[in-house]
Image (tube, rainbow, N blue to C red):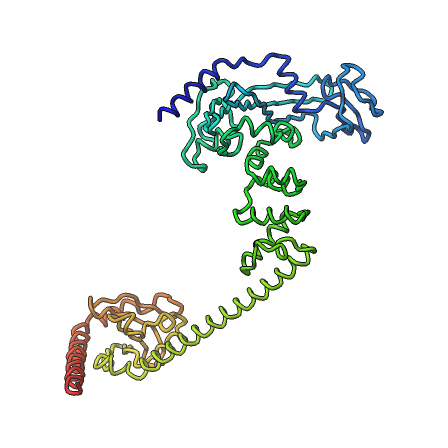
Length: 470
C-alpha cells in the first residue's frame, strides 16, 4: 500500500507541474489532427470549391495552397454534403518526466462552414501516468453521470485524479480508459523508444487501440516481419487473438508465411481446433492455398453437422414414437376400465318435464358429445380420472333426445362448475337444469358413497391377493 500511495503523490506532483497548452501548441495539434484543403459541394449541378480554413470561394485547379490565406492543402478536395460539417478526433502526445511516462490526450473539434472561417478547439481531457513497473494513475475531466461512454466529457469540470474499477467491465474503468486497456509493461519508457509508437500513432490517426496491440510481444513481431494486414486487423477490430493463435503466429514467422487474409486464417485455425488437428504443425497452420484448405475443412464440418442433426432428429422421432405408444397403451387401458372405475354413479338418471339428465357412459360418448356440441369436453380430457378426479360430466337432453347442455359437476363440493350449450353458449333451460340437479343432490351423494365402498373393497382384495402371492 505504501508503494501505491507514494506513486500517487509523485503523479500528483507531476500533474501540477505540467503547464497548459499555449496557442501555438494548440494550433500545431490541430494541424496534425486535421488536414487543410479545398472542400467542394454542388450548387445548381455545378461543383463549387471553398477553403476549409478561411472559407473563401475560388476556382480549384489543383493548387497546393489557398490563394487567400496561404495555408497548405491536401492533395484532393473533400466533398461535403451539408453546409456545416462537425469533426471530432483525439490526439495523443507522449512525454517523459524522469522515469514516469505521461500520455496526454487532447480532444480536437472542428466546425467547417461554406463561406466562413473554420472554428476549432483543442482541450486536454486526460493524462495517464505510468511508473517504470507498469503502475498507472489517471487524471481526467469528469464524465456525465448517466452515460456509459468514455468521451461524454463535462467540459468545465477540473482535471483531477480518477479511480478505476478492479475489473475491465467496471463502469469507472470504461469511462477513463482512452488507451483502451491498462497493459502491463515493466518499463514503458523503453517500450515507446524501440517500438516506435509515436510513428505508429501517426500512421493510424492517433487510434489508441494501437497501444493495446503493440504492447503485446506478437504485436511487435507482426510489425517487424511485415504482417501488416494482421496488425491492421487487430487494431481495427479492437480485439485480442486467442491464446492458442500466438504459437501459430510464431510458426508462420519461422516459415516466412504471409497471412494475406487474417479473418479467413483465424477461421481456419478454429476449424483445426474443432477437428483436433495439430496446430503446431506448419502443414496445417501454413497451407499453400488458404482458401482451398479452409473450404475443405468447412465442408467436412458441414457434413459432420448434418450427420449430427440427422442423428438428433432420429432420436427425437424415436422418443416421440415411444411416448405415443405409451399414451395409446394408457388410453386403451383407461377405455377398458373406465366404467368399472366410475362405478354406480353411471346408473344416475334425473328426469324432469321433457328433460332427462344422465352421466356420459363411456369415453366414446365423451367424443360424440364434444363433436355434437362443439366444445372441449373430450379434447380437454374431462374423461381422464387422474386429471379430473372430482369431476362428473352429465348430459341434458329433451324428450326427443336432442342435446341441450353438458354439465360439469364437482363431486367433492357438490356444486355445478359449468353448464354449456353448443359452442359454449348459455343453455335456454339453464335455470331449470341447474334446479333439477340441485334437487337430486342427495341421490348423487348416495351413488358416490356406493362407488367409494366398492373402490375400497377392490383395493383391499387386491392387497390381500398380493400378500397371498408373496
